[in-house]
Length: 462
Length: 93
Image (cartoon, rainbow over all chains, first blue to last red):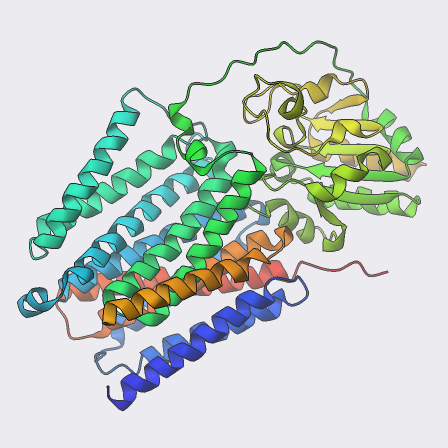
């Protein structure tokens, strides 16, 4: 090892330490910003020191790629709406996967005949794995992005033969993997590997519905890290291995949290497209009681403790700022306001928290499901905004319900429940919600933002 | 020997990652994901060598596109995470 290589590797050790420290600081809102900054310094060191590599003889193309990518990334980061964060993260997952795929490909194409002869099976196995995971991440993320941004229908696409086609893909992967690693100089196997990876990613995500997107995004996030790590194994680059795995672990933990929050296994979510919809065994009896926004105001004016349960509908209606305004009015009125956030509310992990933070809601007023459920009886009013399945008592009461067994925010145990909803239809998962028919539930129909604004106006007239 | 040593790194980094991320509260899950996007842009380091070395045209083109894509993740990921974390405030009363 010459001096420059040693220097580069030492700098990688420092960079890895900074990434680890950065992630550690990310575990508390007070230190998270510093953690992100430290992690960025780690990245800066890793990149700058790599430029010293003697193999690099020209900086033109590097600069070109960096300027284009950096400018687009910066523009996207500055302009993205907080409601659109799931789309952006999906897109970035995809870019990460594609970058790893291309790096794997470039590594292979840079090998001369001699290098192809001397490189061991380990290199080709890891290269194949890089291309496979990178490709699946890319096409899967593009589909997820399309579904989340409304560019394609968010419904699960299911067709006959889907199962057979998926099994065919898995068999094909094994076959192509074998051919690729035994005859790496034949470019046909490489193209086959890329094609099968892209096709599988597409197939695996189109069959998953919009409500399961938090799981899919978290999983693809993990894949993008694993692809980077595999690329590191193929090229013998330790910083890629370590850092890629940190991301891979992060995504896997989030995936696991999301699955637990829905009381489903990962397999169940991934294969959801294959199962036929469950027929609800019982009919819900009862009548929906509608309340006008003006009357909702009188109840809220008298309330001492209010819990707000937001869902994806709040993001769609862009109601978070109105909610925040209502919170201030209630607090001035001597009422305490808490927020109860279910782990799968929204379209990605932590989605609701970011939207509320954007509207200036302090993070210490945001509670998880397990914090609010034990004290549900103490709340005079629970306001459900654009959430449905995460407050659905069918999860507890109806054995036949598709969401039976999912832990939910038990809003129905509060004294009064206001459900702010566009119409009394079933939610995203297409599941009937018995909450709407409960004795203590009042439906306030209409656009959530409009409804809250009318309540706010009532406070003003007071 | 080299392979064993790489697999050791894989093992340790995997466990470390799980221990680190387990402690991140639900409130910060979105910034964690966008931060992960930024960190996964580490592929940039590998792509730099592919893009800048004396290689065939194909390798240079592939490397350069990889540099561009990874740069999007690095720059965009860190900036958007920072923007989000600026919004998280404690109750001041």
